Image (tube, rainbow, N blue to C red; front, side):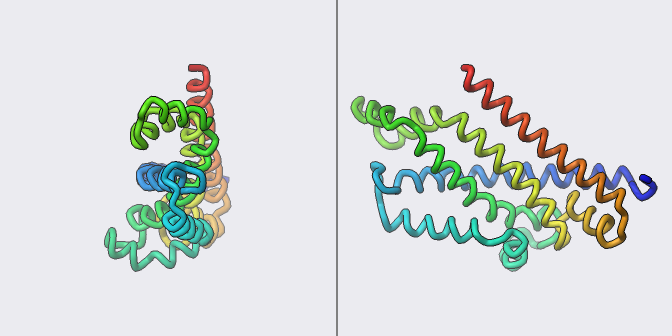
Amino acid sequence: MMSNIYWPEIFEATWQTLVMTGVSLFFTVLIGLPLGIVLFLTSKGQWLENRVAYGVLSVVTNILRSVPFIILLIVMIPITLWMVGTSLGVRGTIPPLVAGAAPFFARLTENVLREIDRGIVEACHAMGANTRQIMLWAMLPEATTGLIAAVTVTAIMLVGYSAMSGVIGGGGLGDLAVRFGYQRFQTDVMVVTVAILVGLVQLLQMTGDRLVERLNRK
């Protein structure tokens, strides 16, 4: 039943998926976290309320979130070529992964910050803290568990997106599933790649849940 399985290739594809997910998640948080903070601070009722800035950022975020990832992969080919020199493989997949996930994470960050008790902000204001101090030393620490949950959800989404990139030769388990499992009708390869992807998702979810649970206890 497993006659078509070449394990070194499976391991290499798994490693490529982990690299794509890890690197993309790093840049997603690097871009999405500040974007989410700005969206929160400039939204209605916040102390840096700015309708124009919020409106522009909100529209751009919503547009990027609403574009199906498979289409975003194709649309971004010229930009990806300019940025990394190729639209194929691990390198060629990372820019569209970040472009698709960063707005999603930014919205999650905005929502997490909205859930924080306004009494904390008012207390910080009463003690004379400025915006940077309130955000860095009060709101972000208070939002830690919510942000970890948001990172977990984003990482799981990136695993799915990385697999989808295999349709255009993005590398990883998705590319293996398309080339061998779909195009060559090798069902055993498809089953193994799907099983590994499911295992990765479960591992990410369990890790995120454990971190949230541990921080809640503290």
